[in-house]
Length: 443
Figure 1 (cartoon, rainbow, N blue to C red):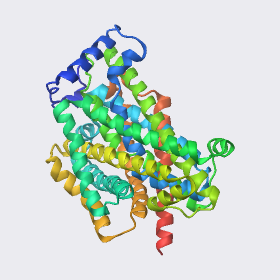
Figure 2 (figure 1 turned 180 degrees about the vertical axis):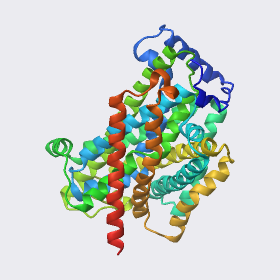
Figure 3 (figure 1 turned 180 degrees about the horizontal axis):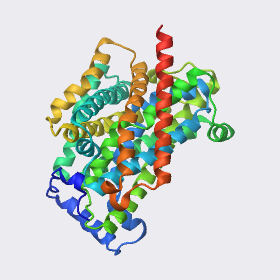
Figure 4 (figure 1 turned 90 degrees about the vertical axis):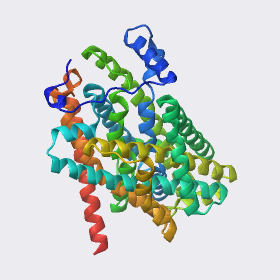
């Protein structure tokens, strides 16, 4: 199917020359599309983009909001994590679908479809959101280095930037599979860390089941924390990024090929987002079992949380917590840099060196670390800020995915569009509540 008339106005760059490892993956993907591979073996070449996106769903901001929610309200907000994760599955599926159907990422489609002033406005807010994202990721990794090795926070923040560039360099030298392998390895460390915490925390199965099955709040503070959890779970920058990861990774020459690619990518999304959701639940369950159940309901800081874990569970729990936090910060800071490049190139067709971009977006985090502000509070506030950026990415995504002239055979079904608009409505309403509560508290 030729590109729709609207998208033909945008010259799509040809795929870059694949490195040897990438060529093997692409050859395996072609065999899967031709029906020569079956089952999980057929899906294997397509796995990866959703795992990179999923890193943003287990970033240090999630640590802050989930630990605060579990410490203050026990298991009560588990249902919020479950609902947010289901929303994330829907959103990331549509983002992946847009890239497959159009050969463009979400910012590029926005540039083609919207007037230039709207596009500029979307780009500016996306850059502000990138700074809020980096705030969480850099502070989280710096805290991880501080907890494990006693590195001062400012130096730990600078070290995080160096590590992030090292991870991104793998893509240049070894191709996308090398980057994906490192990201998956870091996610594995996060999973192992919180598996250890949950096993040793003595969590209540009844409390977990109740928290998942019975949605409820307890006052405005619980709603505020729920909005923070939502902002930490549904991340605006990976809504943009996921479409870029799929747009030219495996290109379908026919409508049927694009449908098959999408089905394989759906498997990728389900696996990756399920892992991310389980990790987030494990964070809150650990806080509920260790902090709330033992009277530490005021534990809302990562450093204090680490200390209490060491006191109640033991020193190994404290170490595993630090390892998981460090892995989360390093992986998510790399993914955040990738997303920033996609946003700028897509909205305004400009790009800047990665070092310059990293320096600009990490500046607020370094200022927070340098002047001694409470890093845990900064983490929570950054997640609240992120929740305000979600509609600006989500609403255009929903509008585009229901456009048959743009999406062809991958156009959203009416029920999918209705569900997506419902998600956007919930997020906007929570944002309005957050704004009202913030203003009333300030007056």
